[in-house]
Length: 117
Image 1 (cartoon, one colour):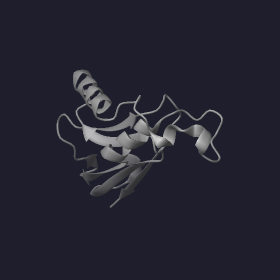
Image 2 (cartoon, rainbow, N blue to C red; image 1 turned 60 degrees about the vertical axis):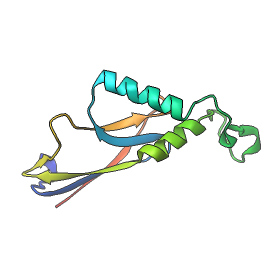
Image 3 (cartoon, rainbow, N blue to C red; image 1 turned 30 degrees about the vertical axis):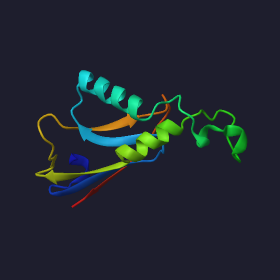
Image 4 (tube, rainbow, N blue to C red; image 1 turned 180 degrees about the vertical axis):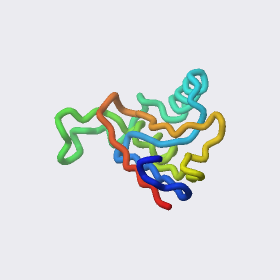
């Protein structure tokens, strides 16, 4: 935040990928395991998805995985977050963290970060 010079305003962070999500929550390993288990039950990777019929799609890269479940979870979780900036600091709760959630990797990923104020 210091490099931006913004003392009061907002920070937006947006994922640039359709199989990642952004969220604000507690970065605690047991909770993260609970979340993984929840989404695995809700959107099982081994279900039948039309998106995974790679032979029926056009312009499919040769390394394209069967990842419809990753896209669906990303849509449910969301791809951006907005955080208030107060006094040059992110205004997050004690246990809150901004987390990029990898749903189809590991892969090289990027996010867009914008600070306004």
